[in-house]
Length: 116
Image 1 (cartoon, rainbow, N blue to C red):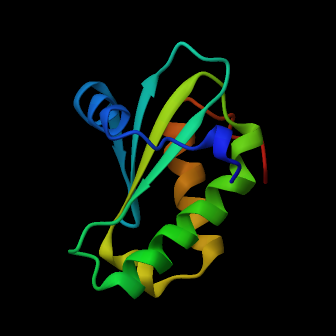
Image 2 (cartoon, rainbow, N blue to C red):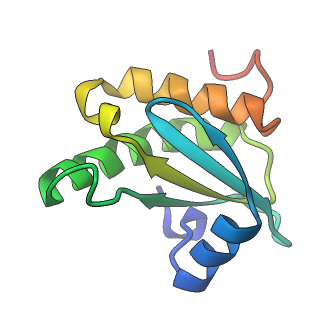
């Protein structure tokens, strides 16, 4: 995912977590907040509850890869945080992509018929 589409500042993470709306799935939680930009920015988080550094990095890689393929189909102008849940370590990227797609549809940031 290109740098311009990443949410990197700690203050931005805090703002989105406090003011944003969350959508849960067994694999990933999506937190969404509108921004004043014309692009969507995405931040990733995997807590120590997921496991050690290797497991956390794998969870973030899975989410990053899945979201990169869906980013062009999402409604622009939002800050999104993806929070990994422990079961994400036992699935392949296609399942993570479907979980993200389901959450984006619930959040009304993507049409159901897009990116099949």
